[in-house]
Length: 403
Image (cartoon, rainbow, N blue to C red; front, side, top):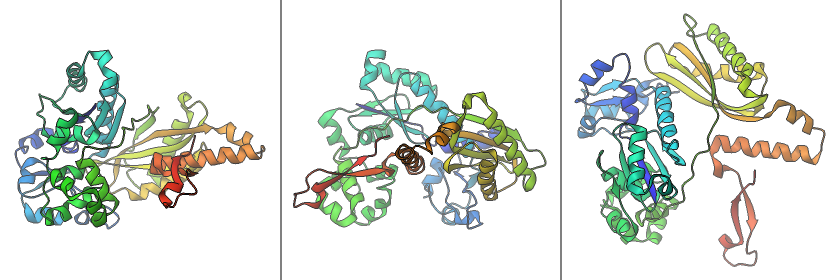
């Protein structure tokens, strides 16, 4: 059994807490939305709004809608500056709280997480006791759904109340899932683009997708259609819990050095401090997150994956200084955090003279870099299974590259 923990409008709640929290809470009954970040187009109007309040949804405003269209539908829409740094901090605190009860958590986006319930029954005494422990750990209103698969648990969490969990089992879960709306597919990146086409075809429930058949869905929508049919039938892939990560971070108030060359010097100080931390234990840096608290409100952050694991302050500073050009506004504070470490600096140099071992080490490093950038499924190898088969898909399968 899989449990889904859903915190509605997590991003909007984080954006509404701050110095102007009292004034924003006074507007809680009105239409609110997280303002888009100024992108490469140079105009926020070209961006898309983030999470929206219930009042904004009543006017037809949805998450991901273009700002111009959102304001056209709801002229009184109030925009709150997004704070991705605070969102990441609050969500990391919530995930740590879930892991404190013994759960191996898979996080898909801030406000939505999954974990297996079966392994926790021996610790807490049963499903109901596990749900109660989850509520105590989070210590905030949360919707919890339990089902045989990740998607069934998500559907149950969407229908559950904040104080009462919904538990679905076996065939009952699949029968109940047939009556749920197709909007649940928007929580999957692969199937979110099908909602418009399904609406135009008059398909509004998951049960109608099941009646169409997997062949018809695949023929019309490709791989996304086949995945949508699997989800509607109550099928899903196993959970992929996150691995515990060791994070190191340094932050610094920049004062009058909110932009320009002075900001680059502040960044250099942060890099030097980070490399001098004893917790690094001589390891190289493979991935870091550069974030800034903006003077105009809100925050900005960007993950940087180096082409190879580095421990040279000059090369790290050069790679990060280019990202400072993407700051949408002057910064009041700068922070640098390590997301993933590489091998110790001395290890790479020692392997360079060992021929085949050096090539194997570089290959492992390349695979690790690719997985940091594009996920665990980015590096696969072809394995011959049935070379004499007439079906091409049965001759070779893709398997993960061993680390």
